[in-house]
Amino acid sequence: MKDSLLLPVIFLLIFLVVFLLIAGLATLKSWGECFSEGGNTLVEAISYNLRVRLLQILPVSILISLTALFIRILVKPGSRFLSFLLPLGTAFAVLIFGYYFLNEMNETSPYAGTSHRAGTSPPTEKRAIKAERFLLPGKFTNLGGYTVYTESLQNGKAANLIIMEDGKSAAENEQKKFNFYSRVKINADAQGITLYPANEKEVKINARPVYSFIFQEDPRLSSFFRDIGLLNCELDRQYHNSRTGFLILSFSLLFFCVASSVLMRISRWPLLNFMIGLLILRGIFSIFRFLKTEIILELKKVLADSPLIDSLPAMIFLFLGLVLLLIDLVFVNYNFWKREIQGG
Image 1 (tube, helix red, strand yellow):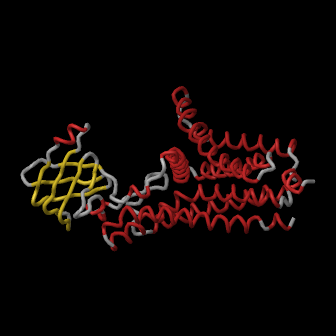
Image 2 (cartoon, rainbow, N blue to C red; image 1 turned 90 degrees about the vertical axis):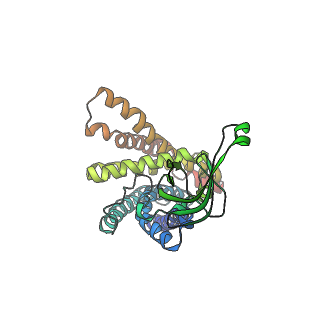
Image 3 (cartoon, rainbow, N blue to C red; image 1 turned 90 degrees about the horizontal axis):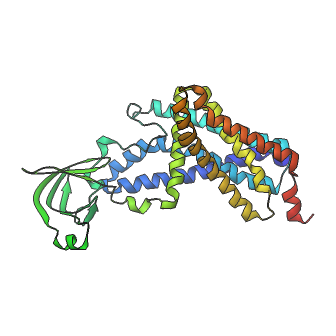
């Protein structure tokens, strides 16, 4: 009983560490993308995006913390009822109040009129973007099919700029020509830069921030981040359109996650159980993406759009969670894992 009553405190400690770690990594990425623009722009860009980034990482931080908490429950099971109810209730409260608090911060912030919602890509402040985000003076920089060099860059004006269009073959690269401009005006936006040579046609170059390659995610994780973004989009949409729908979806996700902990007791090896926990976490996002992008889209082709269709993912997660909970109660010994480790 005592071990179970400590679970909310342990969960909050795990969540705090996970949340701060992910928030730090997300802030570091924004820092790297804006570093070349100077200190003032850097501080402004990080503070502008901070609230939105926190909203984006809140749900995934809670799910990761629950998965980590399952390992603690395996070691010291405590009360079966409390070990299910307390983590679920604590995680649900953190998600709801955290989402409400961060949204209130967005609405009362000086950027509230221009801030983006949590499900979208991180916003980039238009008035703060400088050409230095994409182009470093004194360095040859590869930008969206071009190689660009400028001797100096200040206040959106480049001096002694060389631009070369990259060829698609080795022969084209050997014969490629370059253009030289003594003075070029440069405008920057979220997608890249636009060059305005004197008396010549403008050149639009789509590009990533100059240091962004350092923080670019592994391609194998791209689908995972895509699914997280999709879940964030739906939570944000439900929060602003239907608070009841938001509550139901949030509870169903957490209920399914906690009920899935039964799968982590099928093995006596801690490392394997941990890997199963990671697969559970990945499966939550994959199932949601499949329901949202495959099942619901097909249903909307033959049925009229209705709140019932939008609530389908939540209903599916609740149903799957109930099935796993029933399996846990009927077929799985709650202390199985502990007895296996102790050789009992």
